[in-house]
Structures are given as structure tokens and as C-alpha cells.
Length: 142
Image (cartoon, rainbow, N blue to C red; front, top):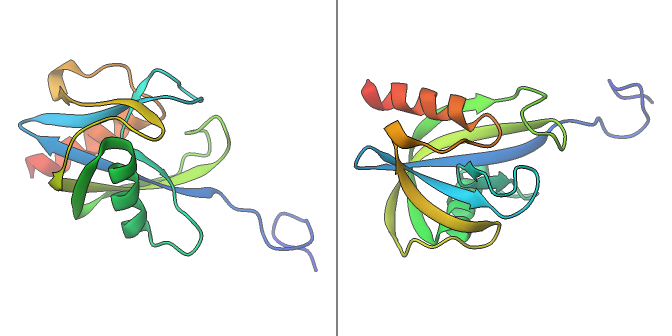
């Protein structure tokens, strides 16, 4: 039996990812990417959802792994699914506003730096993270 891709076996779909938006004092937490794509560029903390993991658990885990911070989810920012958002292939990111509840800020895992940037002084961003941050700012302004 063929799947919707015309291939045999399970259908191929986009990879599922998460991103966390941490805002404090009108500044957003960004990590500098250690690995390609976009190595050396800043991005929101996030990454791939593990098999068997909820997206909510994944965003908390990814923020902790990359920044050292323990966070709690506040609300959904959006779902970002442009097939060209990641040069490695089609990914879908579920992005959450989260807030710090503990931990010590330090870049780790896939990040070689983690720090807060004022919204009016953001560095060039990886992926579609400028769009995500525009959406997050609009939510925060409501």
C-alpha cells in the first residue's frame, strides 16, 4: 500500500520542533548556535521533539539544556510551518511564551552563549525567529 507521498511504508512528514520565548525587562533570551545551520547566529532556545515526548515537555527541556533556566509555559505564540524555514528540511515549530522560575543562565548543549537582548537591539537571527519574535511582541502588547 502506498502512502500519500506515493512511497511504501509510513508517510513522511515534517520534523517537529519547539522554541521558547523568554522575555524579561523588555529583553528576549537568545542563544548563539554552536552548530550548523546558522552556526554563530542567534536564535530562540529550542530544538527537536523526542519520540514519546509532549511538545510542552520538549520546550521546557530544550530551554533548560541550552540556557540553564527552568521555565514554565505561559501561552502559545504560534505554529510555524513554512517548508523552507530550516535548510535541513521541512520542520514545524510550536512556539511558546515561557517565563523563568529558576536556574542559572549559561549557554550549553547546542548553544555557546545565552543572553538577553533588548527588543530594539536584536542581532541577526537564524531561521524565521524574527517573525516569531514579532508575533510574540504583538501577544505581549495585548
